[in-house]
Each structure stands twice: as C-alpha cells, then as structure tokens.
Amino acid sequence: MGRGRQKAKHTKIARELKYDTYTVNFGALEKELGHQDDQYVDKWADEYEDEDEDEEELEKA
Image 1 (tube, rainbow, N blue to C red):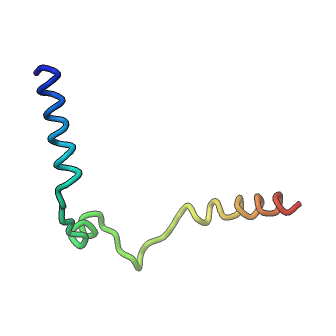
Image 2: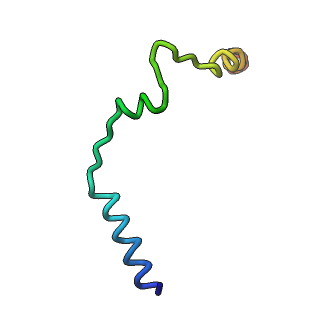
Image 3: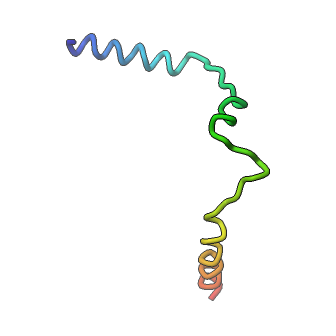
C-alpha cells in the first residue's frame, strides 16, 4: 500500500473514532469485569497511608 492510501485509511479511521457516537452498555461491562460495589476493597490505600502521614509531618516541620 502506498503512502497516500495508507494516510487516507488512517484519516478515515481517525474521523470515524472522532465523530461516531458509540453507546456503551455499562451494566454488561460491569458484569463482565466482575465489579461489585459492596465488595470493593482498596488494598493499596492501607499500605501507603502511613507514608502520607510521614510526609505531612515533614512538611509541617
């Protein structure tokens, strides 16, 4: 494929992505990913909480 055809194809795809509106079924996506609000636990929040407190103490000093 020549450069002109390749560029035209990329331009066409870019326009489709920019101007087409896609409908997303968030319910189906949520089920597929297995996300449930009542069981969500942020496992990293507790691990780094102490570091944030240490940084705040250093900034105050």
